Image: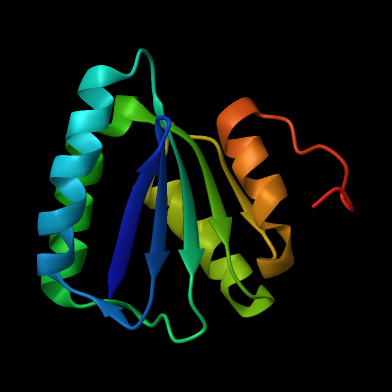
Amino acid sequence: MLEIEEENGLIRVKAGGTLESSDYDRFVPLFERIAAIEQGTVPMVIELAPDFSGWDLGGIWRDLRFDVMHKDQFGRIAIIGTSDWHEWATKLSDVLFPPAETRFFDPDAEGRAERWARTGAEGERNAE
């Protein structure tokens, strides 16, 4: 399951369960539309739900092709999830989003994650 929304040039993604190729059918046109409008790169906040389990084979293939085609359009990518996803997300971001700057945030830091994705600054830890 993939929930996608856009707010002032920032793409917010909530991923749960197992992502399938069909999830990209909804994500790709939104990203491409925003990338065509925005000057520079597109920042994203990706929230991994507790039930997130990765991709099926079709989803992995679509993700890799998409990342190669759009590698220069990714802005900062904030990944939000529980600590058990931290190491996985860090390693995966190096492979999937090599030119993009990525950072992992705990679930209670959604505001800091969004600020960082938009501006590169986290702000105060307790200013949520």
